[in-house]
Every structure is written in structure tokens, then in C-alpha cells.
Amino acid sequence: DRLLLPYEKRAELATNQIAKQLFNIMATKKTNLCLSVDLTSVTSILDLLEKVGEHICMVKTHVDIIEDFNKDFVTQLKQIADRFNFLILEDRKYADIGHTVSMQYMKGVYKVGEWADCVTAHSLPGDGVLKALNGHMNSVSRGVFLLAEMSSEGNLISPEYKDATVAMAVKYPDLITGFVCQNKDTFKDPGLIQLTPGVQLESSKDSLGQVYNTPEKVILENGADVIVVGRGIVAAKSPETQVVIYKDALWKCYTKRVSG
Ligand code: 5FU
Image (tube, rainbow, N blue to C red; front, side, top):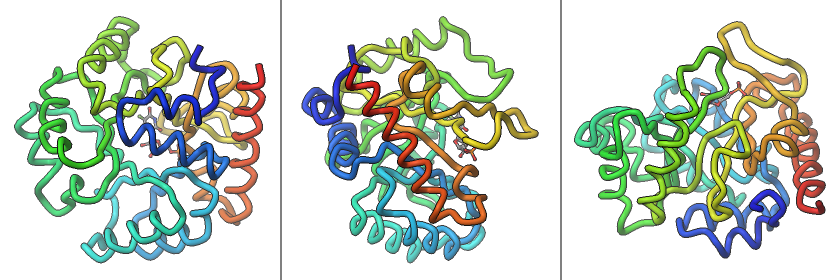
């Protein structure tokens, strides 16, 4: 049962290098918190990461919302990530034919493939998406979180779509870091990571369809391994204080889960 195994044991079972690294970072830093830095300026993102970097295992970006994106941002982001030992996930949700995804990943303004340890992708177009990403990831340690479920209300993902997504991933063991999903029975492989967004302590939803659960619910009931928190921390009066509150709450649930 993957839910009872500690992260350090699961690191040994991971076939994707990023999954291995992420399990080990969580075990070492004692944090399963992934911060979603959904801010629109370079300085606001870098300043926040300086303050909270020691408490997170990964940062999740949406680089296409940054107004003043530039190459220097990437250099500084990578330096902070190295210094605090966390990974970078660009939440691009690739969802086109393989040829287009290949260019979206490597070209354009953002050149995501040059700096993101891992990215998110939809299974909707078929496994051409994964073939495209795999083609670029052969020589370097990179990974993909495939979307098997979403947190938003009214999303069109069916149980059949979810199962077909997990089946698609089986063919790419070196590439797949894990799944973005909401439920523990989505997959069984202990070497893969369940990344779960939609977590907040204060609120149960936003005005545009986001649905929030508590740390207890997502980790103990629903099987989350890495937990994505955005506005719960980023929009707080004091993100430095709030990040510790989330980190401690999330880690406590994980230790409770693995102690049976
Ligand atoms: F795949 C998903 C999903 O199902 N739900 C999400 O909320 C991704 N997300 C992302 O997590 C979303 O794009 C935001 O960047 C983040 C959640 O932010 P929040 O402020 O905690 O709601």
C-alpha cells in the first residue's frame, strides 16, 4: 500500500529521476508542501521564495502570468531553488498534438524545457504529448505530472478518462513523476507521486469553481503525497507565518498516515 510507505522508501521504488529527488527532498526537509506562486511580477515571486524556500519541497509556477518575465528571472529562480533544495514545476498543462507541445516546451519566450524540473500535461490529446516531452527529456532529469483528475467543480473528467490516463502513463516509466489527482484509488504504484491541489485552511471554495479541502482530508482520506497550496499562503497577510502553519499541518498528517 503506497499510502503506508515512507517517502524515503518510495524514493527507492521511483523509476523517474525527479520523483526520486522529490521523495528524498521531502524526507530530508520534512515538508510535503508545494507552493503555487501565482503572482504576476518577478520581484514578488523571488521575494516570497526567499522568505519561504526553506519550508517547501517544490514551487509551482504559471510563468505565462508574469508581466515582466525575463531570462534573469529564470537564473535567479534556479539559484534560490538550489540554495533551498526545492524543485520547480511549471504548471503548463500541455494539451495539444505532440508536434505543437514539443515547440511549446522548448521554444517561445519561456523555453520551459531549459529550466523546469517537471511540467504538467493533459492526457486528452493522446500519448503524442508524452512522446513529445520524452523526446526532449532523454538526456536530462525531467518529469511529467499527468492530470488524472482536477479540483474544480463541473470538470468533465470521467472515471473512464481517469483510468485511461493512468494506463497511458504505464508506458512511460522514466518520464512520469506522478499524477495530479484528488483520490487515493487513482493509482497504486508507490514509485509515483500524488500531487493534489485545492487545499486551504480558511475557505472551502473560491468564486470561480475552485474547491478546497483540508490537509486531513487530502492526505489521510484521499492519498495526497505532495500538496499544492496557493492563495492560502500567497494571499495571507503574512505568508512567512502561514507557510509554517501549512507545512506543520501537512507534515503531521503524513506522519500520522505512515505510522498506520
Ligand atoms: F490541475 C490543477 C487542479 O486540478 N486544480 C488546481 O487548482 C491545478 N490547479 C492549480 O493549483 C491552479 O492552476 C493554481 O495554480 C493552484 C491552486 O491555487 P489556489 O490558490 O490554492 O487555489
